[in-house]
Length: 446
Image (cartoon, rainbow, N blue to C red; front, side, top):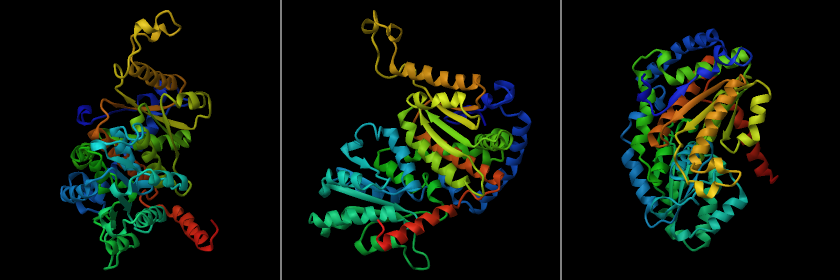
């Protein structure tokens, strides 16, 4: 696939021994062997698309869910100042990643039309009390996202919000304040959240039962919040389709960007004993995307003693806290850097202000110039010190780019899982903690 067909450019060059030395670099033989193994995974993906065994692969081409998304969005945006999105993990991280395209998280959460978007996914009593207390409940709306409908964190958030409305005298208007996105009823029996929604007349959307939460960002789970934020949801799916296209066209692994990435990750684990996957972005708007990746990679592959630990970092700030370790610490990491086109952007330091100071070399430069220099310097320094570093060059941070990145890393994760011999779609170890938390709550041990 031509590089111009994708809104990013992936480079693996500085991961190989013939470029960065044999102590940290991967042999071409190990990589080629892993890449050849991905052929069977690509064949499986094509069959899964044809049979709809993996509904995720049909999502980029979907059109049937756009009208319901629009209808619920209009409901939530009607006479609204604040929208809360209740969800956790995959039900929130994708939405947060897309929200950062608008500056969410760095501009007091103010969005298009003056509506403030809140996504309090990490359940915290003080945070919830503060954000609810600072909102006018008469013009506040709530979107609840829960695939199973039984997840306790969004459930207690929903009940708390309903209770706050009731206490404020708005109980009779409850149905105008909420919408719920959850799985459809099974055998005629709704899940707990759907039952709550139906009992109160809340509008509902169906979470595709065949798409797990951490893979759901391209479904209405991610696109409804994106629509609330004023983003182009068709462009998100177009970016995803561009990454999927060579897979469906039967291209070989060398022409499928996620297959190249999966082969790199797995070959590094096998030959070099890599135990950590460090992802670093050079833009605030990438921070939640990196968090989304960490959940996807960790929860999908951390099984049977396999997988690598994902670690996110944000440049330039984390250069000051982690770069020393990256360069001189254990050789147990594969680095993936996301480089943005930032040169010539941002506020300028005037030469007339900087001259005759120790910072005269910054005069005439913009903030984006320094970020550009630092991101390139970090990538080059890692390589010169024999640390394997993959780069993604992102000419634009927009909806199409994010859609492509989401699909790339979902496919990379799925392919890596098949190479490692683990199921990338389940998370059995997580359930133990959930069961125990319910037990403690019932016993009053909180």
